Amino acid sequence: MAINQISHNIIPGTGPSVFGVSENGSPAPLVPRAGQPETAPRTKDTGNTRESREPAPQPNTTSTSSPTGFTTPERLLLAELKKADTQVRQHEMAHVTAGSGVVTSGASFSYQKGPDGRNYAVAGEVSIDTAPVPGDPQATIRKMQQVKTAALAPASPSSQDLKVASRATAMAAKAASELMVLQAQERAAANDSQALGSSQNVSDSYTRVNGLPETDTHTFDLAV
Image 1: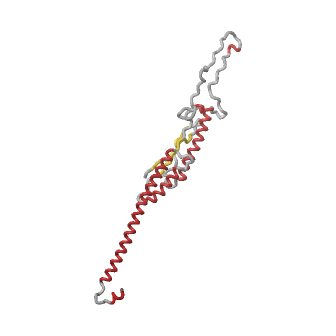
Image 2: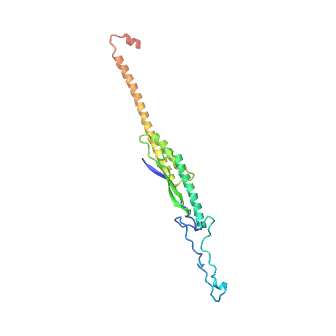
């Protein structure tokens, strides 16, 4: 049995740094702006006044937290993960729904943990049987049509989906050629059988006529 995977993969957080995530999808470290000191210098203590004893205001080097406790980069990453999870699950479900009879397993997913501690699906795949039906090209054609339908079922097929669909198209074309050859052979056999039957009838007739007694000449007169 030939098994292929039709899959979908989304990598949140690989866009511009404005989203606050690194290339591998984790929150980017927060750093002060270029040229800005981490702390402001203290004023020189020249007396006992309140102003001279208090340090200068510190610059804000952390992102503002939302009421939910997440920073702005974390909230953006979380939104991306939720969107990816929805898209991946819908994509794989389309494969499973359209692939009845050829999909050999349910969808399996790869996950990424979000800032909220939950796992979100960012990639998924289902296994699909792309083997031809032995000795039955017509059944193979029907099966490959089903494989192609399952592979192209999602709204946005992945590159792997397109490869599986292309393979199914090629195998269906090969099976169609085999079917034409098989049908031609069957027609030739039928013609041979018909010709053989006609020859046998002629031979039987000759045998019957040849076996008539020579003295029974009126038989030949009636035949003429």
